[in-house]
Image (tube, rainbow, N blue to C red; front, side, top):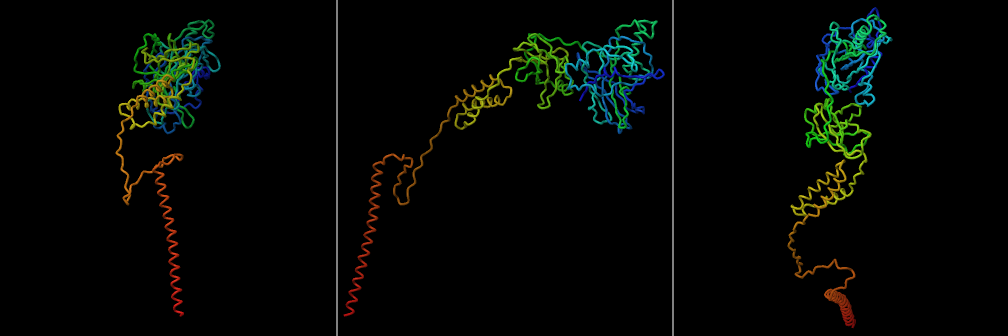
Length: 526
């Protein structure tokens, strides 16, 4: 994660002790004094210079003999721009100005910046310039560093790209007061000491030590370097100043002027969408950006796409949530969508407004309407959900194709609105009506009656009468039914009578047989 360190604090306590006219820094107590070999940083390049930002890129290389011993690498850009100095005394110092107070520690993560911390780090301020514990002068200007401790991928060489924010618009950055005989890097502390001496001599050439008549004097002291700080496994460190290379001078652009509302284009390539179309005064609004061009996407992926946002009716500049005078387009990790966050002014009147964004050249990239204040009532989707459920139970085969096609489309559209989290109440109501109209327009498909099936005939050749199983229990039997029941009863009685006759006849036969037997037996006894 990129971090923006408070180099101004490091400068204020950059204690240097004078030993026989040689100033030594204690920024790195275990200063690496071995041979760097091929360890170096290439010439830095500057691109995409805006009003408050610039992209710095450079190559790096670590010598093979050092690489196995490397514990960590910090890539950094150091920015100093001093516009006035107030001397306290004429400093006496010497030595080789190749050390740096940049330690790649402390500071504030770019994701944790607030309005207050942005100003304290990047804004113009005054700080003491010390020699040991003695204040030599007070310097006014900017001094900060942008550094990254997570970018190194353990490779021996590569290319680094570092977006630098916090620059002031229409301002020149670069290097002054350089000393070629000491190498590529001249420590900013050293430059400020030299300038303090110059101001003292200009203020009162006869009072070389007191500087009693010296007041705040306008100066132009600039330092701008890119490099790396390498910490080895034995605890020693290759100081930033041992690898840093100067960045060529460049001038930031003037801040773009907001286009008036009537000049906003009717069509743009990019599209903006505020979540729920609503924002609250004094709160941060998330604005999604769709249809970015490939070049803009590449910049956003590299954390270097910076735009300027405004809110209308009268254009008013919006700041980022970190207090920056610009907004940064980024990719949302959870959705993959591009977006920027902007703070809505606390005193903005409630009502309908517009939000627009312009690039560094003042070209409007996109704009969108937004409702500020008076949060809308929750969207009621209950009728839509019920309508979709009921419509989903209909079968296509029951309706004509011409009437089913628009119904199917209305049902699909209604489902999409029901699933859309930021659908407005107007969207929901319109979907309900469209689905109801399409459903009312459905026409039943014509059905062809099937040929009746003849009842099967019984094997005995008799006629089967259809049963009437659905007849209510309290219905009176028809006349035919009564005759049928009477006939059946007669047949049943006949069957019973027949059985009785057969039984009596059998008994008579038995008596006759017995009588005959007795008669035969009587004759035999005679």
